[in-house]
Length: 266
Image 1 (spheres, one colour):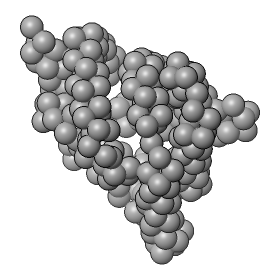
Image 2: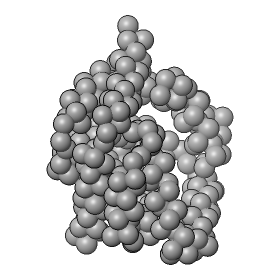
Image 3: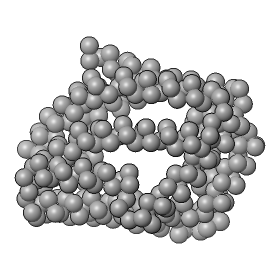
Image 4: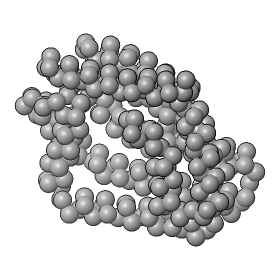
């Protein structure tokens, strides 16, 4: 956490360059705006994150419902939206400086990444892909709980078997979001709106990440979130005392990192 946060400016510039190949003037603007954004985030958001983590620790100490997990996700998304709202003017400002070649480069890189993911899904096949999903999910769970019990592994296997289309749906949804963002960049580049208007468009894009405008798409996303929440609640409720201790320590470590990073602001 500390390593990533304290080097967020370098990481952001590296990522943007890999997609857009920024010119020197754009690089300088990104550095200045990212540093200002991080300073704001450090001074205004991190203590709230730490308090949020502390409340989560208290909740997972007992029985947890799927509704509890969904509420946690809603609160997490709200905090991400706050950061997105703050970053929107910076994204709009950069978008207004992009040329068509830079946007084309980003679109091609995104398309190549999507093709690679789909090829891997097809290559694995349905049966192997299901086993691979169980393996990856189990590994993620063990990073929070420590070694899973046989009962918890079976819970994961059943959940994945009951939701066979989740992996495909998420790839579809991710690609759609990326295409929509590229379309937004092209619209800003072509229309050359005032920066305030471009900022409004960026914020509208972020809002759609939380709640898609199409009813069917929203319903599919909610079903995905409910299924994930039910699985997480089951794993927590079937955790051993040692696993609960490990989970509490993991959450506490994040909370302490947030507090330490916030304190650096003075």
